[in-house]
Length: 168
Image (cartoon, rainbow, N blue to C red; front, side, top):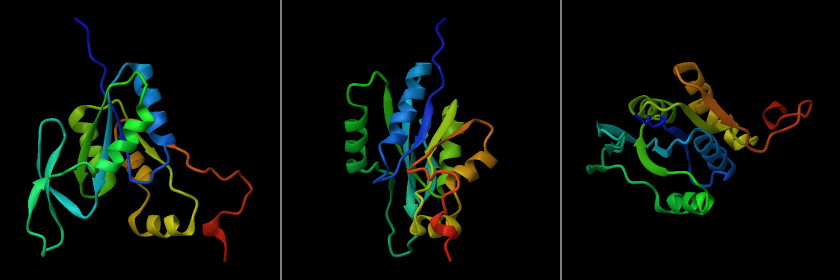
């Protein structure tokens, strides 16, 4: 009996550098696994989880009463298609809702992923401020998962260089 390897889950966001999806696709290809590209909308919350890890969700905004299956951003899907074109890896997408680390971790548990891949935060003041209020997705996952969390560095800053958030 041939066993299918568990998938690799990668967290994707609009405008994210291609390096994250490329690295995740390399891991998936090395293991012969499917790559699941998951995007999380923090302005919505999960109502019902479906067997494949997708979900129905609703807006936190009380003025928006619709409930719907979470939809994957077509522009982000096009970016992923462009990045993965010609690569020998099976891939799919999932649109999730809620707090990003919790949603990615929950999906990884549902599909029994072998690992979760995310990008590091950008070394800018804006991203530092956002991480201060929302926390680092990579750090939250690393402390709340029983599976490996791989962080792909985005625009790394060499050791010994003053970081933007250290400036006075």
